[in-house]
Length: 158
Image 1: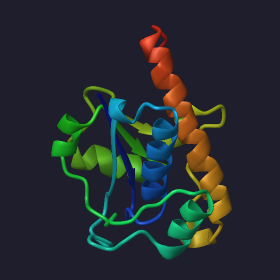
Image 2: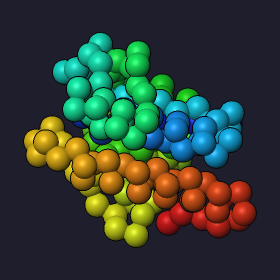
Image 3: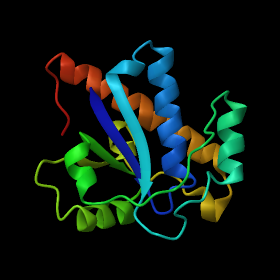
Image 4: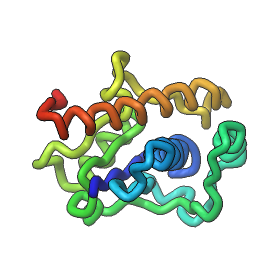
């Protein structure tokens, strides 16, 4: 089983969107049992809060639910629990490495590093552009799935 943890600052917009998009993708591919997928925050600001309503509406507009999800902060134990820890932007990566006390196994990556256009995922908290975030998250999740499939066929990730 492959365990993936998506991480952003507050765990109410980008990382839960990635969590539920990825869950939807693997379920539709008939591969849900191959994965354990979750999300977390690097900060404590939103702990216990649900998915931000515009993010929830964006997921729902694509037929994806996120009921019951509440924000939680990642811990250093997550490094041992998960195979991949996927951040949404460079600040997330710095905080993830701090929380995890480094990245000796090379598990921490940016979501869009799995695409042809590596960069930070658009942050809708500041832009209110949930369409751009949707496109980034969707592309990144498809890229991770393709990369994992390549891993099973002997290909690697830089």
